[in-house]
Image (tube, rainbow, N blue to C red; front, top):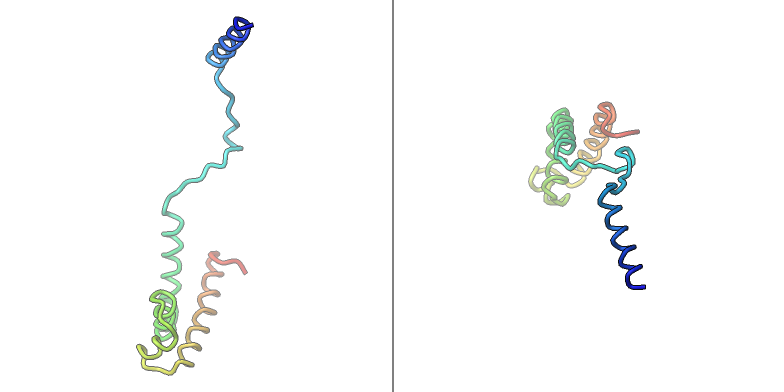
Length: 108
């Protein structure tokens, strides 16, 4: 019995050595490329869109979303009332959405 099992194991090992192990077709493999090109391009498009905003709107967006200022902190920094910061931020986000949709970055 030991000899039979040993021979089966040896045969199995030899068969795998002669015939390579099957691999799935390349189309079925979910290959992903981890590079920084896509985020870099998106950043450039967003920065270009920010440059198309009015300076007051761009300042409000920059302080609140990139520097994580609160509305009160942004208002103090800009020297305006908090309601003005909210309004500028709101209209700036609407304008950004329109610009990015026109460039195909966001879908309606």
